[in-house]
Length: 173
Ligand code: GUN
Image (cartoon, rainbow, N blue to C red; front, side, top):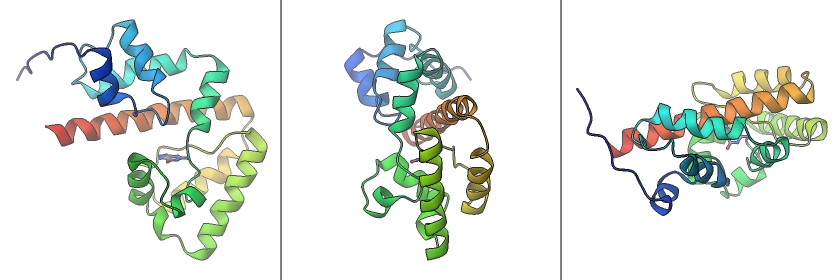
């Protein structure tokens, strides 16, 4: 079955649809649109690849700014209900809103240790993981060097974007 080719969206419409796929970083979608690779915007994997390539090709400073745009997992902002809709859904999907007091405190200690070590928050694509798996990955990744963690965070952010794009495609189908 061949889907009809979607017409190209103008920049404003494209940003309205996809500007928030990368957390608080609409410049990623904007750059992808300007490169002209976003015509097949109905294919989540095509979009994830072309926007992901923008992020991979960005300066280290820009990459770090995108990583820093992410909220802590099970953090104070999550407790206060201050996350974006996507983050709220992702964190709840991994059961992070159901942490015991001990688990919550463990997240706070790890968030602080990770931030102190790398200067940006711990980002992981939480789809399919529960909080035990997340805590395990958290402790493991704390042992990495900064360049490896920056690289890993960028890959995880692209994975999160891919998942968000698939969710949107499914919801609008
Ligand atoms: N992975 C999926 N969603 C999130 C989020 O909101 N914050 C962090 N740090 N990682 C995530």
